[in-house]
Length: 536
Image (tube, rainbow, N blue to C red; front, side):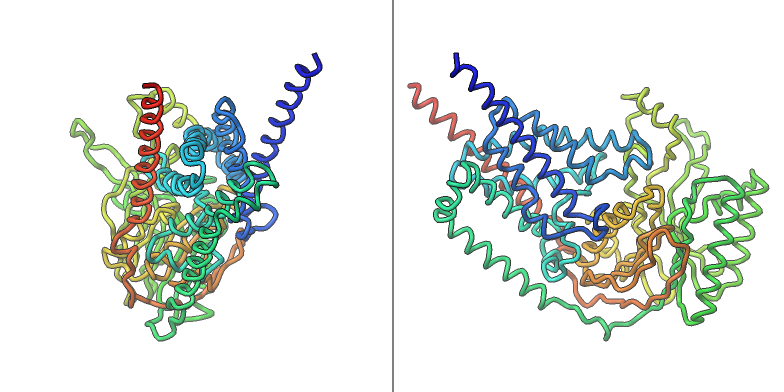
């Protein structure tokens, strides 16, 4: 009887330990990025944040691994992306559930890698993790937040290798210590030293690669003083442009103009002024042509009259409403999230290509009409998708303007550079989050777009983070978040280097994905064939 009583007790204890390890990993994961304790984040934690998770993966049985996957995915992103609830409670629930689903698949695969390859399974686990990070950026649900490499945005010598491999090699280097230590501790502390002795070669190779990455980083371009320079003005009017109505839109317009005039009064040599995403909401082109709302037309006219008096170009975010034929050929109004270049008059327009899922578009209306209507009822603003990689030409520089979270996707900035952009100008409205960590997490990914393409990245936002980032990822100037202010900054127009990433894109991630799945499949086939031979 006593032995029967002990087993359930031991099992419960083990479950509590495993749950504690998962919670620890989720907390360390969240702390590795900008967070409520430190808005810059604790980036060294990223190298070990997944160690507790991998210990659990090694130790738990198949009966619990699926539950643990769901739990870890939900909790880790609820801590890391806690600010999504500020946009709408539904947004947070959707993202957390999506990541619970991802980890429902990923964590069992990590365990399968451990079972198939007891000695070197940790290498396959690292590959599977990078493959997962790559795949989760694709398609309608693409969402790069939480990729481990982005935690290292302040570790400049380390991230220069992104110009060759993209962020993916940085992620691989960051996850490897976690999988290695997790494997070393899978049999407890007593098994740690024997495992280290058996795997000294890995430690030596990792150390050598780490040093080589740093050498590459220190040897990469970091002095851009000899490059042509451009002086830019930035206006951060600290307002969520979509809140309010005509009166609020007028207040925003007045703030934008007043701050611009203050900046120009301080420095008349500013060559171009940068505002932010949808800083002015009433569609300028729409209300100019159709004048369906007299009050909004008045605001549009006042703004256009201001631009007509200016001697420098202005780059602004705006709702671009257009009449286009619907499926039956009848004209209907469609709206684009757009950036407009005004140089006295409207010169060029960019329309956002990669829309935010659920909140900016939902293409499955016919398949899920009720869910579609639920999103519409929550006043989400649907945009039509743009198609052209616009390169603006003004003030002696060619530049492109990824809008909002478009700068979190490497392929977009790469395509803009390949189209001829010398500078990347991210136009963002993150004020809805009410969270500095949210804005910092977004900016951190912009750092990688600069490094990957060796191009200056500047960010014009309505409430943060308005900043300038040089081609080596160094943040050179910044307006404090949630502050109404302006900034004047001179940045380099650097295009002396065409990076391998700009030329080849996510080639490394694709290679890791194919190799990891091939090794996993080979392991499964080998295991099955051994069992068949044993049975016969």
